[in-house]
Image (cartoon, rainbow, N blue to C red; front, side):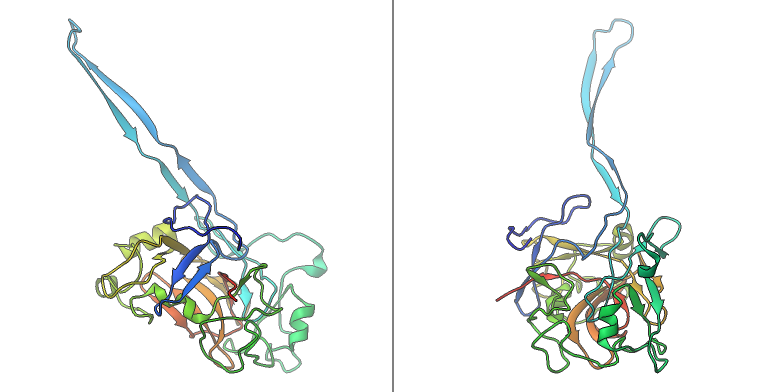
Length: 320
């Protein structure tokens, strides 16, 4: 909550995630919410720490004996949870995906009247899928997919849906919250520049681990294994001071691989494989900036896909 103190602790699975102060590449600080909007934690398994005493005793006389203690450390594992998705500029959440060991792309169960059932629709009169903003507001349970699979869901490409002062496309340092922002009171969708501290220079990294090590602002040493085991990236909150020069004083923050809902159909995909987090800033009439990552790629200001995709949102605290 905005009024609560922030943390400088390292991320630990299974513990309550607190708001973290993150420094971007230009030394500007943002207080990120501890979790994604709509997050539901996955199932967990825990074995608490145990101590066992072992005693050796000489057979026969029993005169000689020795005793020592073995400590079995705590073991905890947690499956990837799920969170709601948002099409760029829309306030209403889209249904999450459910993940388990067998299938990654299952829609969560829905409850309530059938007329409000989460649905993939093309309500446009042009056949493109693009609709007026009022239809998006009137049908919050509709995912408005686009026929071209690379476009805005909205027929008018507004720049200021999530940033009231944005009149032209481009990344910014600050956001002024709008009525379309899905974040709770005191928070807003982050500006694109808030994510730039995840690499050593604020630019994207997309190389094999042998070449990218030291460029990503993470405590990971074995990218493939740690990324897979955690189903996401753990990043340092303090910015790097150059290649192979990390600062762990600010603690760490976790971003999960929640995948997305595809712009061309509304169906989900890539849960456990990649993560995508919207910023409030448009890049052009069809695309907007977002944090994107996989096992081998971390891109703080990605613009590859369009506004009609359903991505996760990780809000920051509003600033004066």
